[in-house]
Length: 260
Image 1 (cartoon, rainbow, N blue to C red):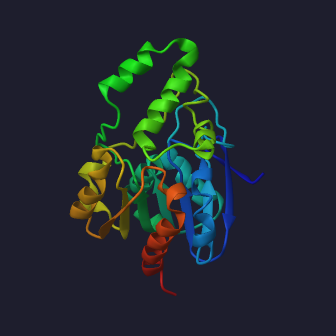
Image 2 (spheres, rainbow, N blue to C red):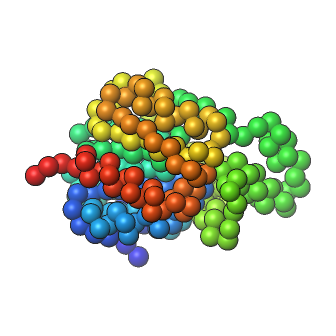
């Protein structure tokens, strides 16, 4: 199993294809398997790498505070990649934008697919969701959490593949008490979008919660090199529409890639 040692963690990765490097970051509803249907399309043109974030899937780490942003930079370092495009789904999109703000010299492009955004409250969960979870018996809390997640993020339906991916997350395999990722220092990303120095694309999922659908237009208005597209999907866009999403990514990444 290919792994890299990064900041005390052992992070699983794989890669396919050749060319300029593209690193795929998954979201909080699964591991790098969320990107599996997209990889063959991107690998026709790019060196396409995906990694399980710390505590997801096959990646492990010590029970100490950490930063997914620092881990992402560490993966690039460990694989001796001088510049890459970061393509992040959901939480991975937030991480990608944070890295682009902190280390623009390491990136030639950044993409958020149905991304979160530092400092922006997507308000995906309601008080009713919280009350339902709190009211669930202890032995049913995990199942209740999963079903609430699918109501919010998978309104088009959750099949067995989506359920299996959910079980690869820290929600299903809780972290030790007191262990949480560190947020980047300084002002959050939503206050710094004017500083995004690399070509940027945000892909919105049409059936996402309203607060998440605000993010693409917000980035496009405020980041100098950003564009925004919307696809007819829910949050699981990499599984629902892999070919359509891949064409969107390839068009953008091919145009943004460094010219030799």
